Amino acid sequence: FAAHPEWFKWREGIRRRWLAARTMKRAKAIITVSNFSRQEILRHYEVRADQVHVVRSGVHVPPDGLPSTTPLVLYVGSLFDRRHLPTLIQAFAKVRMSVPDAELVIVGNDQTHPKQNLLAIAEAAGVKDHVVLRAYVPEAELRALYQRARAFAFLSEYEGFGMPPLEALASGVPIVVADTALARELYGEVASFVDPNDVEGVATAIVGLLTDQGLREHVLRRAAPLVKTFSWKQAADQTLKVLDRAAHYRTKT
View 1 (spheres, rainbow, N blue to C red):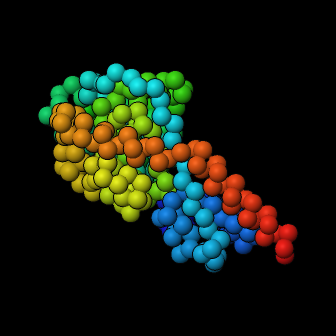
View 2 (cartoon, helix red, strand yellow):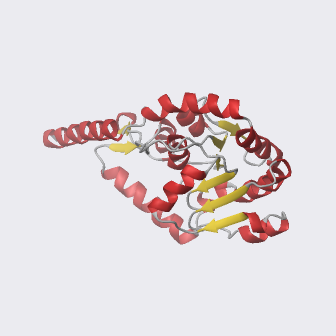
């Protein structure tokens, strides 16, 4: 809302910018979830560098399940324009040329602005009957979708963190993500990085993950140790240290 106000309705953008600026001026310490977000905070707000602390979120690792053989492509997350769902749908239409039984499931509340008619885009691409849009699914069903998926796509050009791709990796699902500084920071060498505006490139990356078993195994071997670095226990310990430091600072001032 500070870096890209054009992505928000004017009233919502003003509310968020006012609230963030006001609370940061009062804060003794600021916790954020990535180095990228830390740099953005320092760029847009007048706060000291030593006030802003990075505490990465953890990710839950579910029990091992059977490897999926279903050519299901999954997206999870609120629907925003910056996440390039039209590109994903158009790329999926090309995926089906190589993988005719592929399906695409998109799970998330529609918050696009300006509004995007994703069903109309799917119909124009000739894949309406193979694209499922769900605004919400219960937690158990979401876990089942992660278990069924064979590839996960998240083409967001701007995020502060990006939990859904990590959830996919933790569930044994390789990921295709937009090539951004934040994605490089979080997913390292594990993700297939793409230009979120390149329909052909996105389609090629997804087909690779659906059909190339050697590639899948290579990616998932690298993913397992990466996922372990996103620990809720570590996040809690680091958060407590920041809170202790802030409380100590307050008693001295």
